[in-house]
Length: 58
Image (cartoon, rainbow, N blue to C red; front, side, top):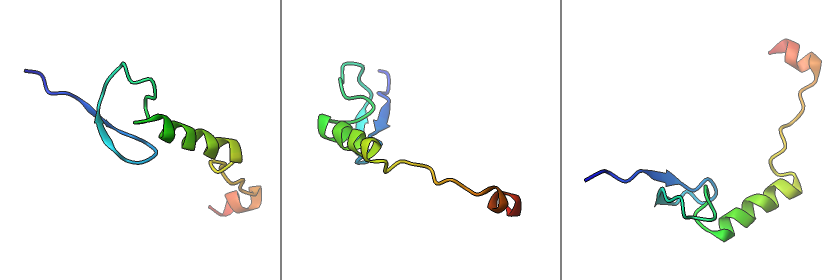
């Protein structure tokens, strides 16, 4: 018997069996998918810009 591979929902952290029939992959549900989309739409995932002067100090 083969061991089933598992994945972790990037939004809520729920562990689930990898299933190619899940329409919400890599999320566990439609709710997690919509929360993630909302975060992108509102700019929550923006990477802060670093000034060139600050970058030289790093």
